[in-house]
Amino acid sequence: MKKWIALALAAVLAVGLVGCGGNNDSGTTGAEQPAAEELTGAINVEGSDTMVNLGQAWAEVFQTDNPGVMISLKGGGSGTGIAALINGTVDFANASREMKPEEITEAQGKGVEPVETEVAKDAIAVVVNPANPVTALTIDQLGKIYRGEITNWKDVGGPDKAIVLLSRDSSSGTYEYFKEEVVGKDMEYAKEAKLLPSTQAIVDETKANPDAIGYIGLGYITPDVKVIEVDGKAASLESALDGSYVLSRGLYMYSNGQPAGVQKAYIDWILSPAGQKVVEEQGFVPLGN
Amino acid sequence: MVTDAPHKGRRRGRPAFRRAAEGVVTRLIGISGIAAIVILATITVFLVINALPAIKEIGLWEMISGTDWYPTSENASFGFLPAEVGSLWVTLVAVALCMPLGVAAAIYISEFANKRVKELAKTTIEFMAAVPSVVLGLLGVALLVPNIRVWLNLDTGLTAFTAGIVVGIMALPTLISIAEDAMHAVPSDLRTGSLALGNTRWQTVYKVVLPSASSGIFAAVMLAMGRAIGETMVVLMLAGNAGVIPTNPFVSVRTMPGTIAGEMAEVVQGGLHYSVLFAMALVLFGITFAINLAADMVLERQRRRWRR
Image (cartoon, rainbow over the protein chains, first blue to last red):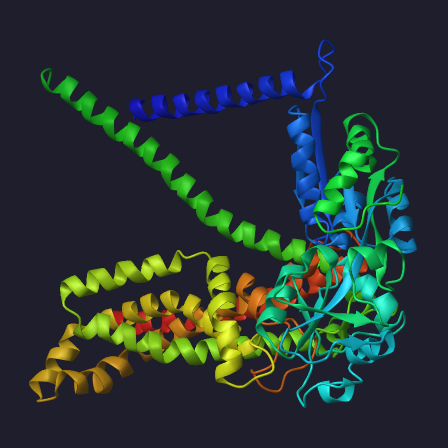
């Protein structure tokens, strides 16, 4: 019995020591060190899946230049990030759409003042399997396809086969953007549309399925899928830059109030030529001037 | 008497200490037992409280019988029916697959396998239960989804059928071990009696062992079903999440766990959509609870029968 008690005491002691150690560590690294000019601190970012790879690339470069900064990044969708910002669990919400008025109201109700910063631009490419002979669609045709009014490829110049509709799920900013621009603001996606949990899942299914159609961010285009022309222009860096491609949009980062301290340093760097260079490397469209 | 005294004292001391220790341990175990009930009750209360705004605003029956799921639209509609029917199809496929396979495996392990094979098989099955569901989901995406589309000549491989196969594989370990236990519990007197009457081993199995263990096997199937209906990651990755009310398993379906997992992160805490997801969780919890309860009652009946 004595042995057990001793053991239990030892365990409690060990846990206590580890706990104290942890506290001390965070005390020395987390607090501002007046002597060093080096940036320190933690930045939590969550949101748009479209922006996950971009955000990761930003974080990697920024953390290499500023070893004292810890950036944690999570995807999940623009809605997820905005909800996290409203719930007060992150510093920045990545969003591939603008915040809705009701989200802003909700945020203000919880004492959060969302501040929008446009950090890059993106174009939504409409993709099909390379085996699909269809090369161009109009916004009108796309709308009919995604509302379920056109269900066979033969109606848009393809083979006599059912169209397999791929979409992101409702937590995605791309889903909302595409709904607004293509499906129609007060219309609904066809119930047959498969709401996939990530953009990569859309790429994978389009690659494997000759009847599939999907929409993805510019950064996700691979040679395994075929980008089709929308209203006469295919999605590309050039067509998005000169504004001739219809389905292009801004990418945003939202913060609670004006960013300050390490957060401000991060967002300023993102908007700087160095940060915008990463945007281009990741296949997105950098901001003009 | 004098020489006895220290002896007596020692005797009295030890049991007193033991009694005290036993009392403490008994109480600790008792608390652990009650804790399980308290946790379950707390979960239920938590679900109900969070689901209450949705139930008040929309109505529980309106949600359960609603046919449209457009949670983020201007005129949002929250109908669970597509997800309920989708979950049902996935579960049906899973049970249809794992019931014959699982019961056959249990018969082999319990009645035919020699000791070494039996040990090996049981260990392997336990390992099967340890494979994380996301790993099985990935395998499904890479191997099943493209092939099922070609083999069955479907529009897409992301179907209830595909998800059902993987969920069925996941439910196998539960089914096999409980069914095997049930057959193991059949008194060997019945077996030897049957063999003595001239039945072969196989005849003994289907005439004597299977009927005797039938309620235990039924419970095993029910528990596997409970496991299947709550499975989340696999259905999120493989079922396709379309909003139609499916009339067969070869189309993309939305499931209750998949919907909750896919949308919970996006919603604003305290909003209507948030509350609706809790209402859906409550419905799902009710279904799995009912299935597990039924399985437990059947198992208990069999236990009582053998005690007689």
